[in-house]
Length: 379
Length: 165
Image (cartoon, rainbow over all chains, first blue to last red; front, side, top):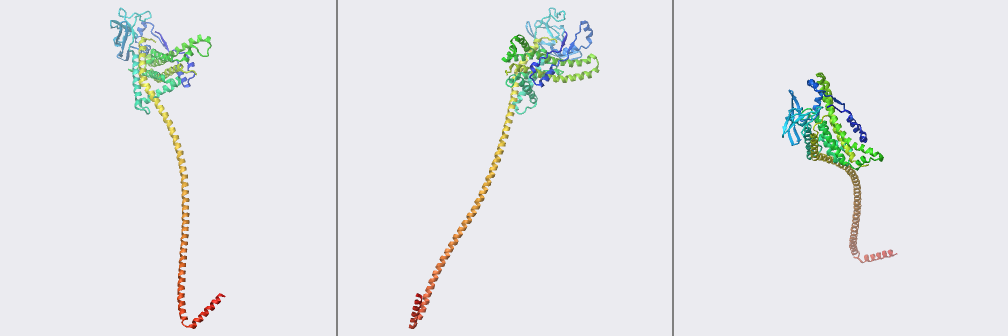
């Protein structure tokens, strides 16, 4: 379970696609390509050591706990007991759909509590739900990974809950804003007055210059949805208490879904110039094409891949830095460290607020850029 | 990074994103973008029509000044004409008065002349009849004796002959 991440994740292959962009965009892109310091986490080697260090503070576990998805929404600890909101577990098992609340596991993550539903037994080991083996337990392999088979898991996890919450808030913000325009055809007021410049920003600074005056309108709903979903999702992750706290965008699966949607939009809207550029790159000698085509095809996939990794890594890294800074107090076991910890955390929080908006902007901008490349008319 | 049960988040992300996208597109983005666009257009057209109105105002102002100038010129002309008419009328009146006066004077003179003629004629008649009466009386007294009658005839004849010479 060695986890090393964040280390120079992306190659600088931006030159080609950004060359024609303005200096403003360039400086923003430079910011996002700054690779964040890597965090190496070292797990305890053996169980014996683990037992000895049971009492010691483990920053890795704390950070892992805060950045990973889970079946419960942990709110606080009280007298050594976790207070959390149980979330529904939805399993597609061999015998059909099984649902129960995650509280049935009683916070167990080690496969000790067996939940029996529909004549099937389930155990949970490190957030993964398995079928229990014949003895009602878990079988581990040599590397201490469970070897039990598992049902398909469609649970409403913490991140899915956060996604629901973010979506609900977006609907609650933007539908009333849209309604307000029906009553008021003069200058926008209130919430609409706050949101309209952002919408106009996405339109005039992201969609129009990158997709082009003729075609940008078709892609506006997607770009706006992505921009605000990422931004609001990022901001919710910065609010350190229930029901926010969960961060959509530090889950690589979620960023992967968004990047895949951008990719699908790109290839389904690609015109003949786009495909022509990939399979018969203009100005390239015929004998080079066997090399160029694989490179161009690879390029099609690296773009959304970079989108996925960039958003995920930036947000997760920021969270890890803040959590690490706070953990310093407990690692040094001294309150004297707290002014430094708090000072730096505060600074990071400020930076994270900026990054939250910046990453939403960058994701939307690059999506618009890729779409623009796919639909642009040949000059 | 420990990815557990990837299917749950991928499944829900796709479903929720698609639903969110459809709802927002229909109930939020289209009305908002439509309203923003409509307002931009109305602002642009308002600005354009303001510009137009400004131009029209300038035209109107120019027209007004032109009209004013024309009116002033016309007033000058009218005033001038009026003055001329007045002077002509005065001159005419004077002339007519003169003519009338001359005519009246002439009539008066003619009347005076004819009165004078009649008076003279009457006077002549009077004088003639008076003379005849006087002459009758004188003749009567003169012709009362014969001598005197003869002497007279003589005198008179003498007179006639001297007159004839």
